[in-house]
Length: 403
Ligand code: EZ4
Ligand code: CO
Image (cartoon, rainbow, N blue to C red; front, top):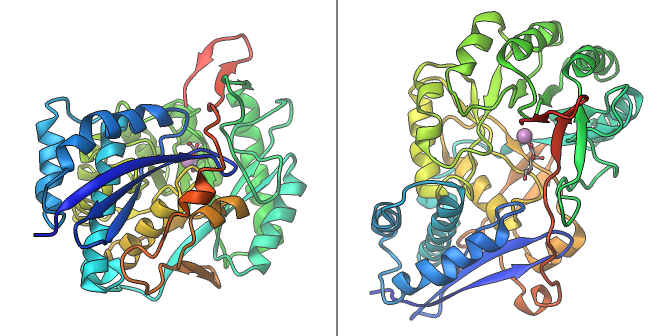
């Protein structure tokens, strides 16, 4: 038996906070799992340290499915972002161990490669349309085949999703939440302009994406979808919050713009109606926030039955451990769509040396056994946890707004 002998949680802040689970076995093989939940990091760290790790010691590291079911069913309190991030970390670390023991890169255990690489999309941001197009042209020159466009909105002083730095973007920007002022009217006028300018400058051979960050009502989202149709966007993301999955019925009735949602989903139940009724085209659930590789494969299989493809969340709060897991997953599943890719800072990359690489718009997880990511614990220890929260949105009259 490959026994789990110890496990620990490493919290580090090489530019931003990351929570990583490291599981060790009696063979000396260890595995890593990302457990980062942006703005709520220490809740997952405690869930793991205080409630999960004691249950893992002595178990057979090979029994991945059984341990997943044990943690999910056994907790009695099912689902939720904290629980599911903790389960995801255990699951990812166990897949890392199994693949290392097999001497194979993880994707080989998931059925092997279904494609030569995973198409990724980069983030082009700017305070103005011109600045955003300028950034997008840089991505296009670097070989990106898909680019997300987010631009400042005239009349609004700051906009979530628009970075102040060209390459690195971190929305969790203060120890207590900052506040953005939001106006749907102003926003709805500006996005079609951005896309018109983008098609003019970038042409039609590049996929263009946009994220509405849950700031619209269903009928506003329907309007935006229609207005963007002439520019053939690859997707409109998080048009509305999906707490009520039926929201998407209304959007769907009005537009052929492809829809993506799910970066905040933590289980298949968050997406059941969306997928079953074919209300979306891409499911954004990701390894760390949706129960690990084991559960994300279940979501992808269900989605595949309903013509929904994957489009995993991949912002900088998803650590290189999650990024690697997402690439092994994306390389193997039949219904891969696209993978989000926001570059990590040099400090983060140094703490998590990794085998994955980018080439002409595609990413590959590499062929190192396991996930192909390690954790430099000595370096990690030099970066202390720093509280950082995501901002909130208010309408111009002060009303709290959702996203
Ligand atoms: O808001 O990662 O598509 N990507 C995004 C991100 C998310 C953050 C939340 O932690 O919407 O910017
Ligand atoms: Co998003």
